[in-house]
Length: 327
Image 1 (tube, rainbow, N blue to C red):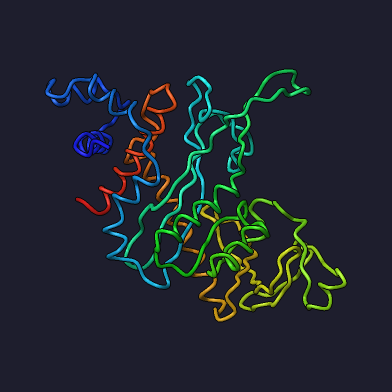
Image 2: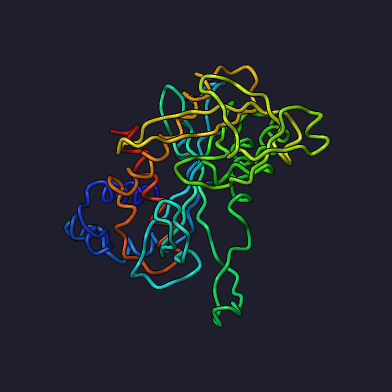
């Protein structure tokens, strides 16, 4: 990794108001750095989460605490006019309710009262070609699921010996397998929604209110529950081998409409207030993704090769880190 060029290119990303190109950066340096040199940097060795950790590790070690939170979420960097490849492809955007063409980026953000730092990320890659008989055409698919990527990221975070206590994420990663992985394999706690009234998803999630009901599979759907606010309900979620604690949170959306979250946690020591306040910290990763796009030029690269596209994303993440901790 050429740290000098990374520093220069990431500064360029923070200062750019239009498309970021090797030629544009060369012009900014008045030809001192040739566009060929920048192109070779972007198309060189693939940079990823391993290299990111080396860069952010000093700050993480300064701010990490035992009650730290790992927030995981993904975003789509739309690329409507870029040719499809293993990372530029079609992904379902839950916010828009339709598929969009772009790059799907999953990030793990370290969050506590001292700050927030991106510590791991993964780009979804559709490397396998299959024939879609229904559409009568060849399409790309990923050989690993996003939930598998999620667990691999957490596994690496644990291997890096980062201090944290909780994992938080949205409903799309609230699978029974992920819950068991965090609680049993990592021996950490989590807070996750199993149903949101904003986006009616996973309404078939089933819960029992006693161990006996779980044994006899006497479940009810989450969507059928009538729960009171400010109360904690011990429940047994289908396919999860340990008890959980369920709360209902009602909140106001920006447009004045009412939203409802049904949150579960594995930590029996938390109060209702702590559960809802800790989960609110997930919003920091939404802000992070917006900052990547608005302040760190995530969208602005016209690169068309997989290596240059992925290395631009790496530099954009590093640019965000510099914006928060180096200026």
